[in-house]
Image (cartoon, rainbow, N blue to C red; front, side, top):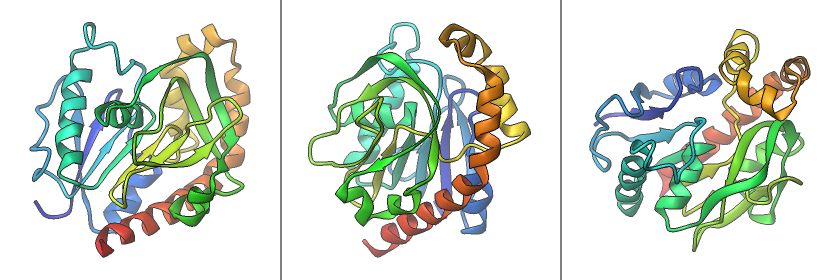
Length: 234
């Protein structure tokens, strides 16, 4: 197995971003699995770490996108074995659903950079590095905090922004991995229809990204370094 990161990707431009080089420097080998295309590795023995990334579909759209059901089952098996797992945006929603929590539409979009309100549990753990930093939010669905998990963060528009279940399972509704410059431009182009439908000006998102992404990169890498050290200790 070695130090492999099994990364499930739903759209090509939503990748590990700034976390990719960080994980490689930490000794991990990155392996991307394209959702609905590639066969996923064994959920228990196939990777030292699993990261499930974001995407534009909903957890409950299993009739239209059957890979949502298969990924949820894959995550359920992995988490029952207490294997290190991180979910980002759709990935966190899939984790929550696999743990038995409700996931569904908020009735509004949350798109743009905004700071997180950390809970007491959030300030005690790795997310403390994100205090005062604006993360990227890009979603219309949200999850309920799974039974037994710690609620870590909130925003004004979405109260359930992050959860941890023990030291090895971390769900983040927001994006900390997003890169600036050309990396972010791929997001804007890829989600152009959604932005137009929500009445959001891409110029404003570019301005926010230019201001926040370097601060977010440093904070995200510090957060993940602490989280990874917690995996090693448990």
